[in-house]
Figure 1 (tube, rainbow, N blue to C red):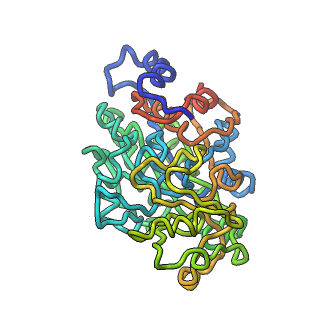
Figure 2: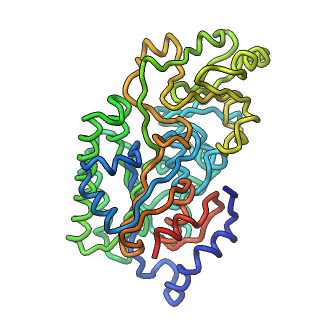
Figure 3: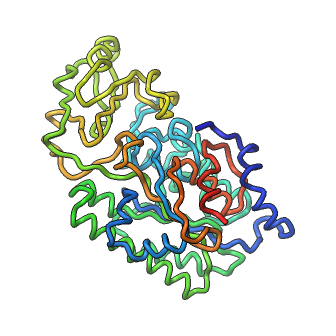
Length: 408
């Protein structure tokens, strides 16, 4: 998809925003708050399992469909894509684990708190809460990747440090508390994150009893949120998304990296559903000869030769060599297998695989009722959010298809 500059896409999608609030001072119109909810690892077809009655009702009374994640179909890259409308290759969060020649000696990882809160990793993109805050609109963010850093020098009006132990009910309670502020001080944009479905999918696989239990628990929390809004007389537009799906993996489908490339030629940074590989200095040609060739169940490319369909490979943080297995196959070494046996599920595979498709659901006064939206790329979620919140679009890669289908 073409990358849309701010002016072009704003002219296409923002006319309705201007018409609806032209006579109201900026930042003080009567637009309802927008609540963006992520259910990490919610595969698009999970909605058909019959264990999420609250989400099923929102889908019937709103708009719902599937979205295709950006490559790589990992958590941090796609969460940042959803709120910036940029591909990972453009917003810079190119993997959950990455290196940057401009930040030497540091490896970005979800567990590296210092890196996660360092704006240098995030400043290539502008998340919607930064745009809103600059426009004078309050935002409140619960655990969304990127929200713990002062991106481009701006923080949300309210935010929480990620705490996996905080229950879904407590997270909902915090969001409802933020919305109890007087209308003039109420956040215009809020975000909420749940990870239990993804965790269960990794440990037990996408069709497991544990995934269904996590789905039911998360669904109940969202039901509490909807009821809490009604009890407080708050009308809101709710957007429920996921960052990626989940595929079944098996110890019978493993590609042994240490049988393909000798350890002295370099080292992997990410393994599993894809491989990022850094050749040792002076051993680049040997590493490429071992990896960038034909393999059963796996394709490998130099950074400059990654297929254009993945929109990936131009950013300085992309590793020199990328390998992508067939969906459901894992890349591992003997050492990694000892630490983490292959079982359950994984993501990061080809985003065009059906198992990687993610959820989109929109509910509230701005959404068409009973609408099934076409499959679109997840960069298209950002223009929907910008229109709901009432902010001009920052530079992004999204298009108008999802907004046109989902919004009134």
